[in-house]
Amino acid sequence: MKFEGASILSVSQFERADIDTIFHVANHMEPYAQRQKRTRVLEGAILGNMFFEASTRTRISFGSAFNLLGGDVRETVGFESSALAKGESLHDTARVLSGFSDIICMRHPEPDSVADFAKSSRVPVINGGDGSNEHPSQALLDLYTIEKELKGLGRKIDGLRIAMIGDLRHGRTVHSLSKLLMLFNNISVQLVSPKDLAMPKNIVEDMRSKGLSVIESEKIESSISHVDIVYSTRIQEERFTSKDEADLYRGKFRLNQAIYTAHCEPNTVIMHPLPRDSREEANELDIDLDGNPSLAIFRQTDNGLLVRMALFAMTLDVVHLVEKNSSDVPWHNLR
Ligand code: NCD
Image (cartoon, rainbow, N blue to C red; front, side):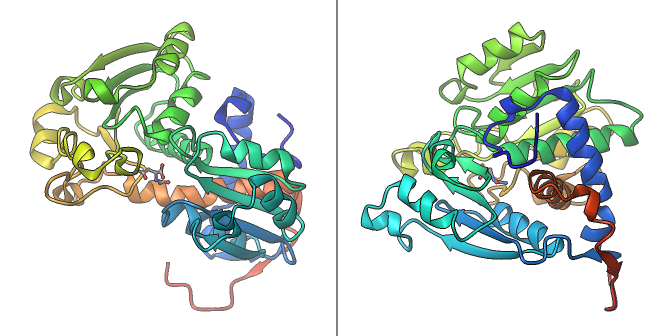
């Protein structure tokens, strides 16, 4: 695809070559993200960061990625504190805010709302999560992490064996990741969820028609025993009608060190888009895994910065200028 000036709304926009390009650019962002060098390539540019749903890492990660390229960030957080609560349409909001910004990141509880917003925006829009539909930047950073982790084990994404666990019905990260995996060869996917929270049928059918091997199950132990990646997810409480309904499913699929040792192959990589629900009744990834070198959850968040920097540099067409606008970091770098 042509990235310059493009909105990024769904992973379905990408071909395999696009993924290679994004990852290549992301690799080049490492010295800037690690503060070995700094670049001012986006000096004067403004990111409109609009999050109408709870977020910590995605919002801060997009904002920090933009800052790391030298740009400024303006934020709107929460529906109630925005004019949407006064009845303003997404169309009007997009017309107004795209006059203030060079690019917009948006999260919204309604599926397809970010794409609707993008139609009325004069600047590129990046989907930071539209309800239970998609979360393209998360899927890219997840796949980037998978590639890096597998490389350390002498493997590639082609041939990947992955188990996705938890609320696969509402989890937009697993929807986007499943779609991205359709671009690769020889992929085996174990989908582990309660029946009511199964991966949407159309995604499963698409995966199968693209040649992926897909097995659906309600048992975590047998599903994690022959995979390279265990990708755990949270019960998406905010998509249920009540907390009580979400409670019915919480804590059903727990991974801790004892289960990992008993069932996983050595070096099986553990991932989660975060936040992990660490409350006793959920505890999908126990903190006793924190000492396990295969726990990649904090490498995922670090990689997210690189991938989001790459997306900004590519959509604003400054990839070739990043280096030219760089200088040494004058402060004491503790990283
Ligand atoms: C995810 C999301 O918002 O979809 N979080 C994130 O962006 N890293 C997953 C979640 O909230 O469970």
